[in-house]
Length: 207
Figure 1: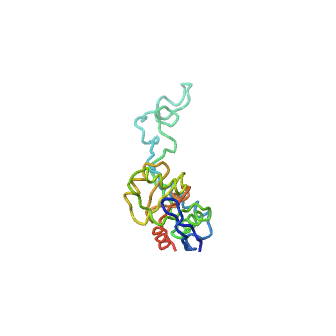
Figure 2 (figure 1 turned 90 degrees about the horizontal axis):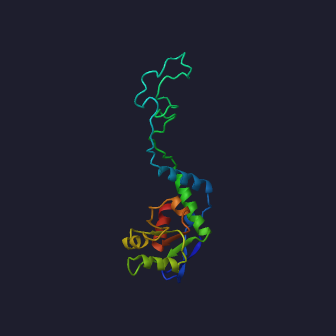
Figure 3 (figure 1 turned 45 degrees about the horizontal axis):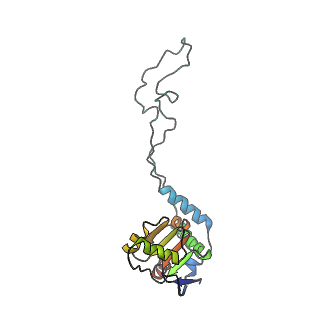
């Protein structure tokens, strides 16, 4: 079991915490992480782009000029793709970009991402996350004490309005509850900050 140092919000050490190998000490599978991230980013695409093909454009029912004898290239409709205001070739239509990923792959990717955070010393465990006030400066002070100055993902066991309110105006800082974040969120943050209670819940979900 990997041993990770536990901290208080003032940055001082609060002992060590033993984490479960199956979740935080597993072998990192980069393939699974890549597959899940591609699927997650694809699902964010709206797929609402649309254009009209030549059969949908208004007009163009008559041949613009006779086939032979004019000296010009033959044309069948003024709504053909080469004409101004003509239809679009292979016009895009609304579609879903969602990709199916097996549950086992999703779990493997999540465990791999969590284990990677531990291996790279990018996981910070707090004994508790209690703020004196739900203010941005209070959360900024906590992050400074923990040396988490870049992108950070703060995970709590339950929804905490004070934490959400204090962190929402800090650039690069996101908050989530256990089960409310994805593999992309883990890969995209420089520091993963979890409370001890949240870490235990993560182990329950993914062990």
